[in-house]
Image (cartoon, rainbow, N blue to C red; front, top):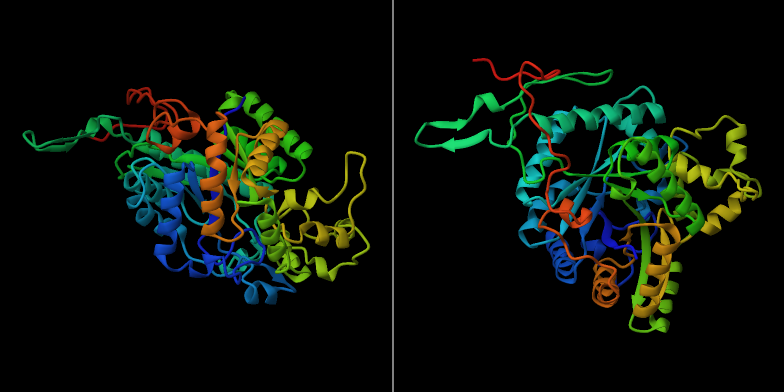
Length: 468
């Protein structure tokens, strides 16, 4: 029986998951700019035993006909939001055990400022920080915002991300020996210069020469997460990720993705069971099944084709409402459209395969209505939802789920207070092995991603001690 890990998927914005629910009276996400709203949520999560709060983030927005989607603006579909990294120190001071995972995009800057930012956050949280590595979203909008001549090709973004993570890890793991910071008042020595290593990195996309100035944090390297199930995304996860957030489709397809990622990790020389693979879960739980169903119907009434299309355009670059509703997405592929550069996993899932036909655009709109980028869906009382969580985990091989709130803090509290105790009573939620996020997720003592032995300066490839 597999241990399960439960997080919450959020954005520092008006609503989650590319669906529309900010206007519902139960939803406090409309107050997202107020830090006290997040403090209330984090305290509930800490008290009820969630593993971490996960923040998605990005600079882009849904576009249609070369400009921002009108629905994206009026309905707040993946538009408007703040930088979640700035919120973490506030929440860390208000919690004791809760971890925090923050999305940061590769390719937007050099790895050095990102490395220092996460070292700082790991210090401020006492080792409770993770980095969700993404190569970008809504790339058509991002390329314009950053003044790029064109979108960087999908697989090139992943090649750049591999170098980006490798260089950042060099800073975190190799730049300082464990005993470099001595703070010897009597000797007047703060740092032992012989215990620093000069970074020398010459990649195709990134280069660095010099010394990393941020002292090692409790975890050194933040827990590395990755989201994406394209071929390049799965290969990247297998090589680098400790936590993997996969797009939940059907249980059977999710099981295939989980198995494929674990296979690729084994081929990369890693223990495939060391990866924590998770999917999104929209869970509307109430004291009674009838109450949960009523909440689901109220949420569904807020959705529309326009909301679905705005979100899908932002993720894939494809405007579903501009297509023939009775034909499949192959009409875009046949016309030489943007397939392959944005949201590939969210396109390929609708192209047919495994002996089944590709759905029509009308069927895609109906299927995504109320779902957006959300994962699996469970609606019911606590016992029903707990049963569903266990069944999904056992059928797919997933290690856990990220709860995607429909009504903000209300949903986080309901799941934490009603469902988590049942899962804990069934022996599905492990006791944390230590205080850091890595220890909590891996179940093993020790905060380090990998123990690094500092080589002698004469034998260290690309490394050298400080000059005398």
